[in-house]
Length: 207
Image (cartoon, helix red, strand yellow):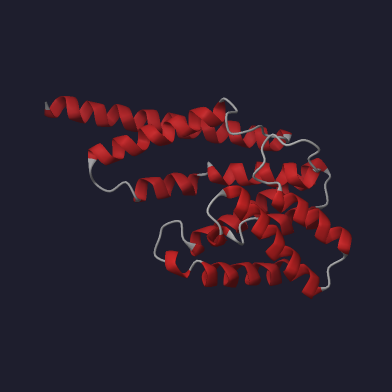
């Protein structure tokens, strides 16, 4: 089931994101991001005694319409609709479809009321990968060789990490999600602060 969903999601992203295919955050990245989110949905669902199949399916579908709308809320709604159409054709049960759609559609609403457990798990899984080590690698890769660009990007990334640490981007709902995010924030802040210190040392010496 998951292999078939993955194949559909990959094909849909490549078709709808064709204009972004050379971008570092193009359809290839979004598909791989979805696979990692699905992995964390699986891990978090096991810990929280949630329905693993619903959570993993939501993780795979959550960004399937990333290139079909401008803002996260619209993307979430379109992704839910695309997921619904696929699951109806594939013969999934109504209860399963409803649960997956709800999680996908509400994944962008950090502070909404009456969240389902599947939605909370999807949100945690998504945030874990959005602040993951591959994203840090992409930040390094796209910063180029210029110290000024690297410094500017590092400061921007550090500000984003600090906001997440203060819950400005929403809460983490699961105990495993909180623990993982704490580890990642600590590691990435240490790296970025060290990077900025070395850039400053280099620039000071050059002066």
